Image 1 (cartoon, rainbow, N blue to C red):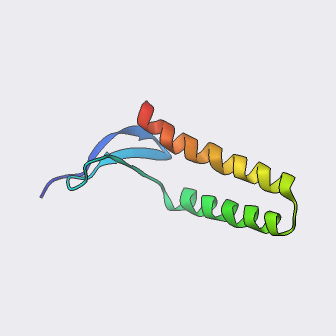
Image 2 (tube, rainbow, N blue to C red):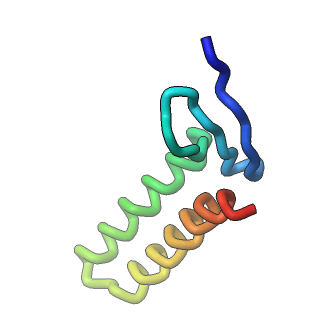
Amino acid sequence: MNDIRRIGGTTNAVIVQLPERQYPGVVIQYDSLHNLLKLVHEARKQMLANDRDEARGIIGEIEALIAGYAGAFEK
């Protein structure tokens, strides 16, 4: 059995290579994933309430978090 290789990353965005996959992936801890989900739900709630400024801020927060995960590939 081949092992999963840790390629790099940070505490919240560990880059791994699974033996059966062509490209590496990022491991996101449950609490980080749950936080993203809560932010998406909150953004949706604000959009339905027509509070676009608040929704825009939350979406910016989501974007920054995902950019951090994606940025781990570049380090």
